[in-house]
Image (cartoon, rainbow, N blue to C red; front, side, top):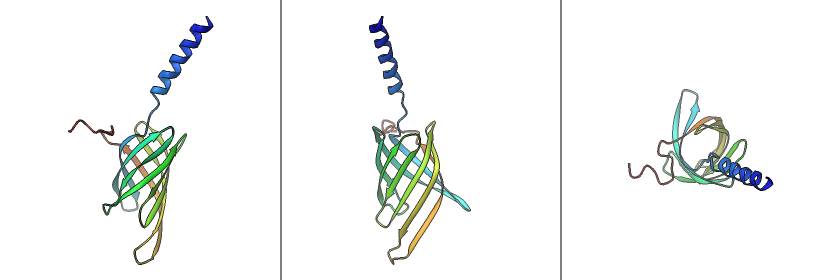
Length: 133
């Protein structure tokens, strides 16, 4: 009886683990700003709660993304002249949260910003895309 119970518990834990949502995939971030919003693309890979990826900036720069997932998602975007920290909650292929950002212009002028974001998984969210579509 103990052996059967152990097998059943193992099978249930394997199913629960297999159904754990992952952040791996392609995402669109919408930045909520006064007077409107704008979007950017990000690609993430999650392995054992560690997140890595790339962020496509407004100027075509590909920036490094790193972070962690637990009850909340924390991401850090590192670009040549600026960085951003994001904190959000993951639910149903969407992450909602807040961000802070700061940097230097090429003329050494410092700037800072903060606000809210909404991140949604792209329809072709698998890393390999939609099979060429």
